[in-house]
Image 1 (cartoon, rainbow, N blue to C red):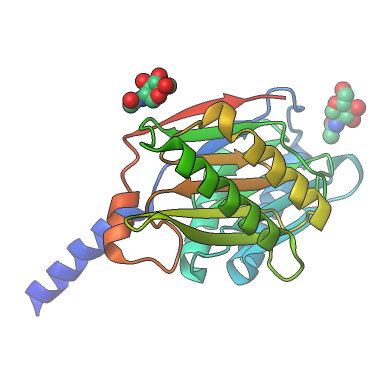
Image 2: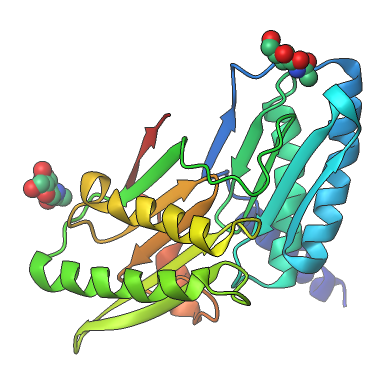
Length: 260
Ligand SMILES: *[C@@H]1O[C@H](CO)[C@@H](O)[C@H](O)[C@H]1NC(C)=O
Ligand SMILES: *[C@@H]1O[C@H](CO)[C@@H](O)[C@H](O)[C@H]1NC(C)=O
């Protein structure tokens, strides 16, 4: 019995270690005002509200406080992740964002499974592609023509899925490039966006693929209003364990940050 508990403990520790990943991107806006005590208090009150609602619904857009110290917040999980993964991701995001950005009122943090943002300016419903992070696989595809044709068609199809009502901003799918090679894609808009704004955000992200990810085997575009990712291996849920192992290796990826 003692052996069993020991084993269980080791298993749990490994699991926690794997779960706590670094943020994919973060922004602590240097130009946003230094917080006052009242603002800090309001941010402290806003974060648990965001965590609680997002853990239940996968998304939250709300505010706390009044007048000049009102703080607006938005949080959202990637639409295909489990409720449990969503909940632990958003909890970690809320903890990290305060550590990372103690004196600013415009803060944003992105993980693979979730995104959290707050600001004293009301950004809810506004299309925002000002700050971007592009992660690309340094490896090139072997047949760019077939690849880009397949990529374009897949992105068009899943963007349309993401923009329609009832999709919660999520579009995902796959396409066979050759009998042996499948391309997987996932796009997502924040749920506060209108259908038109979602389409625009994804069009901007996809339009920038040739600039930052031309002929690359994998790429991620991270904006405040939308997310685009494609890979030559399955990475979205439901997922088989072999694929999960492969996708966890990020050693081949590099990033580029774009600013307004
Ligand atoms: C932030 O700075 C701007 C310009 O200096 C000012 O108008 C605004 O009231 C400030 N906001 C807060 C919440 O202090
Ligand atoms: C991929 O292609 C680019 C542009 O042709 C080239 O500069 C780069 O070295 C290639 N990368 C690899 C890993 O072969």
